[in-house]
Image 1 (cartoon, rainbow, N blue to C red):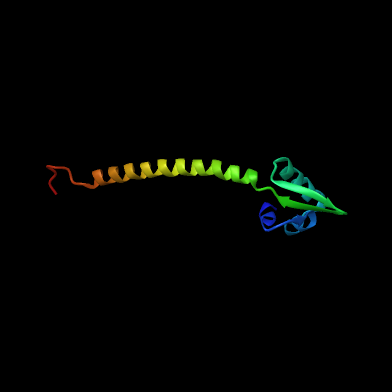
Image 2 (image 1 turned 90 degrees about the horizontal axis):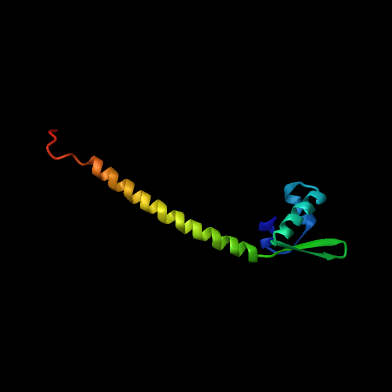
Length: 98
């Protein structure tokens, strides 16, 4: 639903349709997204029109970006250590006859 809203406003029916869910189930799901601050709902006549509120997603992306950099750095260090260890164990020891 969030992906669909990234392309523009959608009614509850339009959001429910690809998931083969009832309007009631879709509405409950959208209420959760509203409480999370990700979606805004506006009533236009008989239709409920939803739009994306990207602010919280930007905050989540920033938070995830920190941890992506953190783990990338740590895994790079681990990779370097494993390469060093592999290189050290693959060299013949001095004094070993072959």
